[in-house]
Image 1: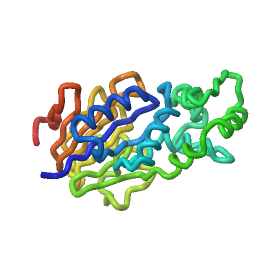
Image 2: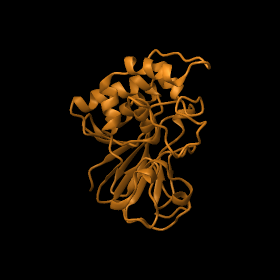
Image 3: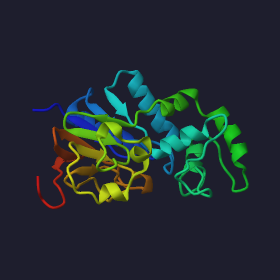
Image 4: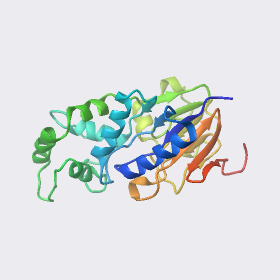
Amino acid sequence: MSKPIYAVGDIHGQHGELLRVLDLIKADGGPDAEVVFIGDYTDRGPASSDVLDTLITGLANGKPWRCLKGNHDRMFSWFMRDYPMHDAYLPVYLYWLHKRLGGDTTMASYGIQMAETDRQSDVHALAKAAVPQAHVDFLDGLAHSFETDDLFFAHAGIQPGVALSDQSKHDLLWIRKEFHIDKRDHGKLIVHGHTPVEIASHYGNRINIDAGAGYGRPLAAVVFEGRSCWSLTDEGRVTLVPADGTS
């Protein structure tokens, strides 16, 4: 039997939910369970700074955790450069501090309360003073993917028809429709987030574990043994099967 590996969906600043699912994982797999975090640790929720502190502390204490980069994590990381970068994927008006993306709530978690009249340059100067360098280093150092013999983890998904080893960072962070509609086997079961669904959902060739924590829904945690998988709940494991009922 394969050693269990756990995956946690998009956290989006929901620190209380992160602590809740870490307790579920500990109860199921013990204190040294291997966990993959799928990215998007910040934005929208109220406690992005606390989320990063918890992840950084766990890694420093030797937890066998793997933290992948989400598009929101890269937006935050790029904002923290000496000269902030805007992601070319986004329209010009949709900058990271925009309420729709949630960078404003991330800044609030560091004690920076924004007004609509604030200039981005002013907020940037405050952020450079308030955000710990350890948080910036963590964001900058995040990997884009992780794989086992059976599973491939990435924040958004993959470009179908491209070898897993040749995936672009852009697709690993941003892809949606062309990945979602593709029904072919990708060689490994793809575990991703990025696009919110109601609950962790199995589609046969992929599993979406972004259950919408950024919008106030419970954070998803899933456990895998090979390709077999279960959602973790307060009552224990609940089998995840493909939507069409195949296995």
